Length: 230
Image 1 (cartoon, rainbow, N blue to C red):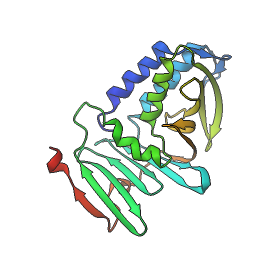
Image 2: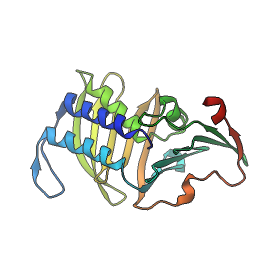
Image 3: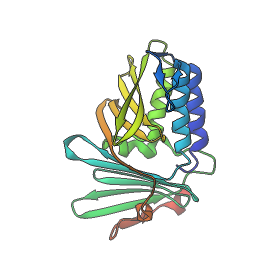
Image 4: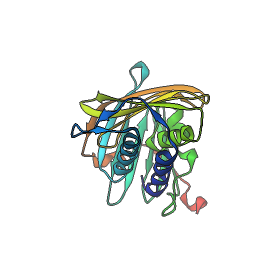
């Protein structure tokens, strides 16, 4: 996501420095045995590396609903699509679109400042609609790392044909499980977010992006608030 890379790297370092991981040793991609601290380092490195990738990921939500994440580079831009809405972040605008019935309305606001992260509020609607974004997951891991009573275990799985490392967190603030693919994409998430149960799983991953993913939906009404925000 534009301007978020530095912040997420700092969060990842926090996870590496503070996290206590329990569980047995596992194998890395080359089949070598790796220790507990190596597992945490590998997970953080995948999340960090994915910030510089171009990819599309589709997710299955409960009730047959779907969501997606699209990310491209040069220039960096990302789009999050979820039931009833979409969030797009580019160097030109932060755009929130909401669909009610047959009508879609998009509100354009100022993009994140250079070298700064988007406001936490940017992801609020996506979370409410069932899409937990990678920055939110990293933030939750960081909070868990600061909880001395949190118990965190690691396991491996396969999602949409992609190998993924999973971290299961048990804590007073709320349990959750998050999986990250070898490429660094969010593979799955199950848990409580803002007091609401959330569940998603990767159903398709591609190393390409349809460039129209960052365009305004055809026929959408547009409210441009960038001038007012500047």
